[in-house]
Length: 117
Image 1 (spheres, rainbow, N blue to C red):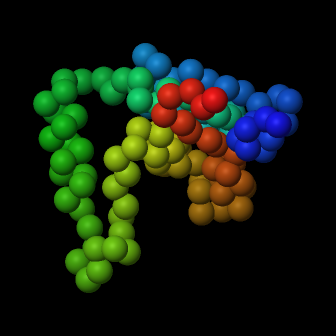
Image 2: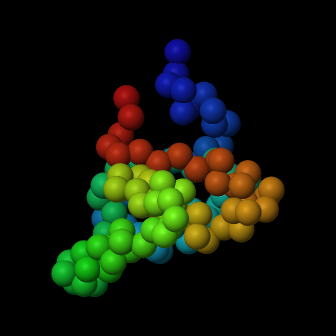
């Protein structure tokens, strides 16, 4: 029996190796494919590259992690640490995820750290 994530896709599913790709460039291509109706699985998300200096990116992410709701921080914004969820959130920002079309497109995206067996 094939793994669950393969069974969820049709025969035309796209599997992308994210290693050494720029985060935003890959996310924009994936977002367009999702809007066109393709199922996309992105593997090895831990190998994605963010351009710019490491110090600047760490500072920007630390500032982003400080943002929260004043009344109840559990309500959000949620700051994902896993590379696949960071990629998912980047793609979500490029989709109209509050519409039915965008939400359906986001459902067609799967992200993985490493390569699933």
